[in-house]
Image (cartoon, rainbow over all chains, first blue to last red; front, side, top):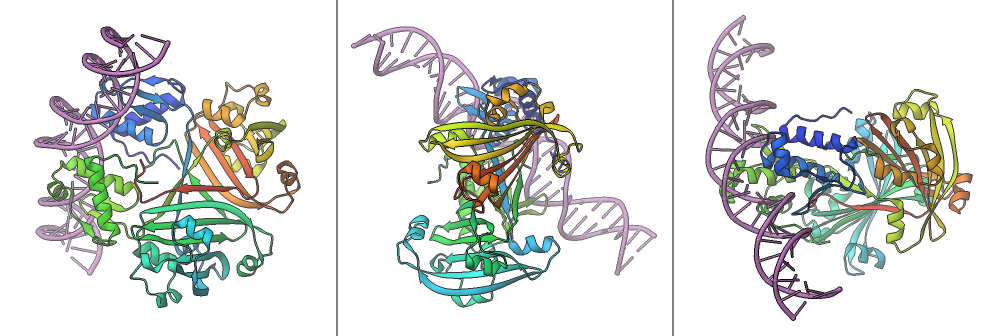
Length: 240
Length: 240
DNA sequence: AACCAGAATAAGTCTAGACATAGAGAATTC
DNA sequence: GAATTCTCTATGTCTAGACTTATTCTGGTT
């Protein structure tokens, strides 16, 4: 809750500049003093001021351009960062027992739409698996995953039935790029059956795909149990 | 799409270290050479190596501790950052005409649950307003907002009917802290009517609250039109 | 008025060196 | 054996100074 704010000169400067912006002393679009001036004001080296201002620029609070100087961002964009942790940890942290069951697994050619979206030739054969994650024996989330064994040579197909694919991937297949998207979908009959709910219930659905240098690793549709909320705390606040 | 990666020595080092991790040269939990050694290897100052490693640590790829050294993170957490832009911009960027209509506005005491969540005394009177954002005359999103005029002294109640509250706030009331959460809800009768859809349809719903040093500024429930997707690209990838 | 070249400027980056500080591991004491 | 203190090390941070680079601005040219 409280700002962990490890004190450091750069952090102090950043906080003071932030304060001036938040309290309206420096208004949106205003040009703020340049690094050299601030360095004098705060009795710091320019590099330190630079670091402080970069922190704020990363938070989207400042716009900085060479020669043009530093300005207070006009339409600050709201950024929020979500942390998607491993399901098992999430469940266990809530004090519930975690279990996992593979519902189906087979090789299957990728449908055209998906292939295009993740950058594969249509018809390429991937492993498709459905699994359910339980919290205290109640279905917690449902995953429908496509796995590209070519991008994860060390993962044998046979292992998949035993392993929690998500966990294996997190631990063993670092990715270079990831995309995520949230949407809401009405549970279809299968969703409802697997999640133990009624068809039509609104489900929060997360799509995630990851790539490494060998190509797409996996793409997954995760449907959460009805009522699930994914939250974050974020923005305009010291990150670390 | 491509890594914008402005080349810089620090960036180059970070990319190389990232490569070694992704390609398994350095495995999870491994201790990597210390800054001094890497500085020699890459013929750079230690400060530059430090900057490079801090970048990766921010991405969650490395764990760094004084004396203990730097290790490859064991269970990398998936972080993703979402950018919530101003509705109007979002709509206009899609080439559609934006409009906005206030459906209701009145002063109202905060219900207990909400008061507790955002840190107000129960019964405090806030302004509550409902509004619809349209894209090409089709309802795009629905907002149900509570506004604390005490935290935004310059905002007169009378203005609210004219203004787009969200935009006014973004431009004029910088916040210190924000919380966001996604969920999925079945449209109730009112949602459906205002969004021009059928009751029961799954809606992606975003809750957002913001605070400044005067207290809570606003809290809002945003319901998107059915089928709406909020996406991101993120993680393990250079931020900027 | 439109265009172009050069000067000036502010941020971007790097370096070498210094000191601060957390914390692991060893040595010491009880 | 457990607890405490000590020591040393790797990261954290800062500094002063230099050089680089993008971009604005200015003034001159067509």
